[in-house]
Image 1 (cartoon, one colour):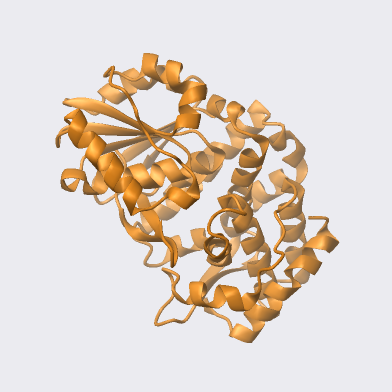
Image 2: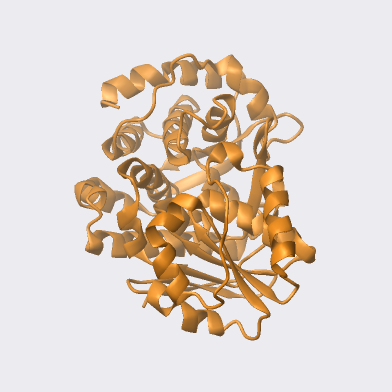
Length: 365
């Protein structure tokens, strides 16, 4: 069973990824020690697929606290609603919250765990590809404001992450593809071997081939763990994980989180960042073409129709990684190696964004 150990300021925790991990969740949760109650936080649509299985495997017997996991509802009012439900259910400081779902469920439940009674134990059971390879590891939690994504939150590491690849089989195809853009990200920023594997085996990954996923998921998780182990609070190296996210988050915000799934926005963001790297004479054009082609191989992206660079500028200036209004970019300088904190003139950013539809058309996106 692939087990990855992650260090954090609150103590180490394990990321366990293997088939049938869900069936072992009760025994794995017991490793956390004494608790006054296990409280499951999830979404109605996830519960329709997995509720019976989860109710039979997670100890406690309580009714789950379900909330809408749409990105547009990832906000403070949702956190308040969950916290009040926990009060009514009798959750105290010795409770364990189990977040079952994708990135939105994990982010919201994580922020609830960080703030409810000033902190209770948290376990992630990620059910989407993006959550299994990325968001369940590293302790980032948060919710959105109208001004931008994840602007309110906390670093709050879980006590345990249980990832079962079998849970990916019920994902709608678009959501599965959305997670693949984050997988591509890891190849670009840190792992040329993963990048080559995806170039050769993308069709199998898209089919959710068990052997391909059993190789890809732990490899991405291991990269995330290595980065987080060196930089938990995103003061340096961890910023490379934001490749594609600067424009990606802005696209989500200006469309009110309704046009793009998270990974789709990151797909556009990676293409844009790749163009910026070429414009700044950092990335050779042959490498840029490989990145764009790999992004294209995941499948179609929602169009950018009606969105202009000027629409993005105020959101970019308010990005968490901005300094004094200066946008700092994560750009590749070759496949597998990345620089962070790169300043790019706005004229170059605007030109690259306006070129995106043409580049995408040439790549068949």
